[in-house]
Image (cartoon, rainbow over all chains, first blue to last red; front, side, top):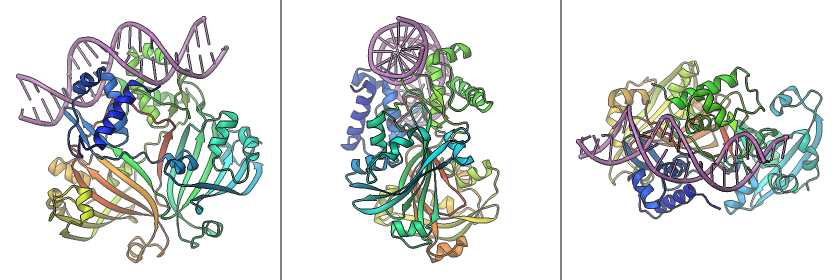
Length: 248
Length: 248
DNA sequence: GAGTGGTCTAGACCACATT
DNA sequence: ATGTGGTCTAGACCACTCC
């Protein structure tokens, strides 16, 4: 079942893609769109908010909305699930566990995963590829309550996120990510097939379930030149009332 | 003048910071908050949408909102204006023009800045520092209609964004950014004081005015270890109706 | 089944951009 | 002066979570 505002948003995206509203031109007013789609102004605003968040259109009080870009920055899906993003992009993802062991949580891990003292976490080092070319070295620390399930996964499991959802109904709903660049260490270089000391794109992340319970924290290192992240940014912030659907 | 929903959002942020709603706990329901603040449900939803976008809280239909983090990811301000971000963070920004010249726009520049054939752009290479330590090498291409103003700026101008706003009323309202890692070239390494071939965080960006006119496109390279970007991510996308204030 | 958030409506007023 | 988007209200119904 698709909602009213999603239909309108889809129609607008389509119209923009078709060149009906070229980059730099103005969109119809909210009232016009409301009349045209037989919806209320509020519903139309939900629709345009989606396009605004994607960076497709911009808005300023008093003037009509302007088309900024034909292609929305739907990127950052990588940050949700590497395998799911890869398949959606038409690439073939792979995964291979290099090392896996349990250990008592360090103070920092306890803080990030909100664990009691003495809790035991599961460390997994995984090499991920795109079309059988190594791209990403993942060092993940899983919280105790999903450790058993993760441990039971085959070592060439393609998507841990999908597996956990199918087996346990666990959703990786929220993620906080910190992005910077680091030089490749000895192990990084060997596994990713790059020069030691060369550039890697690092993403440190913490992921939570839809109930807000931390599931894992990780240090991901991407080989330079294989991937980039795109972000859209509007001054004065944006956003507002509706939405948020933690579900697969 | 602050709006009703901003006040409520500020009150919620404050309550979370004070530990009234610790990480992992639930927020009051929308109806409770509406009653407590004497506002309608819609206004409360605008407020919580702001916190949701910051990654402070999460929501799922049927359950109360959950506190995810005490500190919102307000980062990415760097992407708006290096100098403004630095000052807000209590650092001392600096800027120095290394090279500046005009040239006919290449086909790619014409596309990104939406220029007519034969247009002439302004190239500026600028070294930026934080507390007098070099941090960022910026290679920017300015669109013709702001070239004169940029060219007239002092070579040690701290904030180009502020200068353009004060002199011409031009606002850098929207930005599209692509982030990856690259190895430092000869010039990069010399100016940033790093090892040649070492890691740099690269951000390629295109910025537009509030009317949606492209102003500049740039290739920014950050010395590794000096800066990182943080992103919050919620599955099923987010966002909705309101807001968007292109102004300084 | 009670309560919660997600969707939608139909009105109103204001600040602002454009003419 | 007109029209536009931004804010706010007061209602309604539904899908979902939780008990």
